[in-house]
Image 1 (tube, helix red, strand yellow):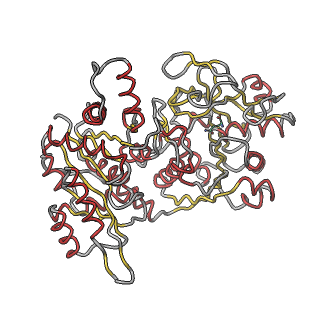
Image 2: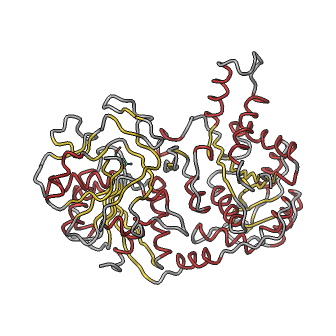
Image 3: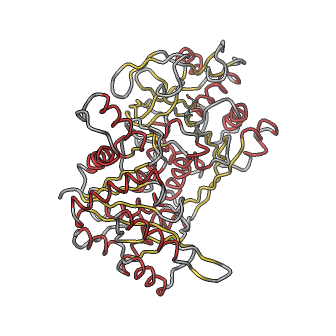
Length: 541
Ligand code: GLN
């Protein structure tokens, strides 16, 4: 069938969980047998979120093909169990950049370049391209209806409905029903106004998804349906759930697929959510429990570790285990020592990061994990620091460090390689004077695992695995021999680059240069993280 489009817009205010809503609908349709794609439209002007501060924007999610995207794309991958690409996310900045470049090349034959049709056509082409091989494309528009930046996108959506017809385009609007405590009432007015605003632009939503703290009484549902001119069956409540993975199940319980199928003429839908339901019940009522110390800096920025915390939930669900995260600020370790914070933990995790702050504390945490033989997973910077720690404390190279922290280091265990072959096979050149953007090793790379290693075992004995990267520095092969002689073994390699290290006489110690968290899904947990949690739980000890 040719692609049908579901556009998800948001009203009243931001942070309503529009991404989770859209992903939940996507997963229900996928489990009904459709090929479902997703597209996130970001109305901000940045060309991509790669250089945006995590303070403002949460995590930078990296796709298989190396695009640095909005963290919502991570939710889509996790809910849809699929790998997305550059084409699944674009911003206003990218659209304008393309149109201006085309204008410079004379592609518009001297015409005056305008928002309609030039910008809207560019948006439309990109939406259609993203949907091409799919039955259904879920398109989430970032921001809130009424935002200035969103206007060209809404106009494009309006045009697409006009051009393709109702059976091919559905509009879902996600809004908030606030509960006013003093009046003891749920209020519908902001939703009514938001729908009026959409209508003014020419879009009439066919379904409303209402975020609410409490269940929505039937009379309120009827009122919303009546005042916003949607079917009562198309007024869906989205109350706060104990886990985001319960949201699709809550929607299904309200027969959300019935009106969607009716609008888009999809026939009778019967999604098989057995496995999903089982995993959700293990998240809500797990049998076992394990505590993982998450050692990092800026821990108040938990959103910037979203994929990793979700990956721990996935591993927990698949092991019927509550994975408790104990957040440990590495700067506190620097002041008070590691033991105080780590003694009651079953596993120690040092995640990725940039810059020097808190690094010494992370190194102390790694030393503690190594010496006390506690299961350890070091990700990206975590692996780099595991090598520095080993060099300093086992090889007695006291000034071992990374070039990232000392550009004149005499013993750079972690350094900047001048040249490497990127995932598309072309040669990339990086030097210490290269600009910050565009010089990272990004996206998926093949990694060859060493026979008999914990890494290979974790991946079901696979000799080749594929994981995603986002880093500038690399482990220095010059130290390989001395490291291995003393028991730090290189167990993963990619075209001569060091991808993983382990410690021979340790129950489970793994450092990986890649970011395993980006490929973890509820129904398909990442093998490194799963093996880590399994060992923390004591199953392999
Ligand atoms: N700062 C390190 C580098 O650029 C590690 C990056 C990371 O952990 N993502 O290589």
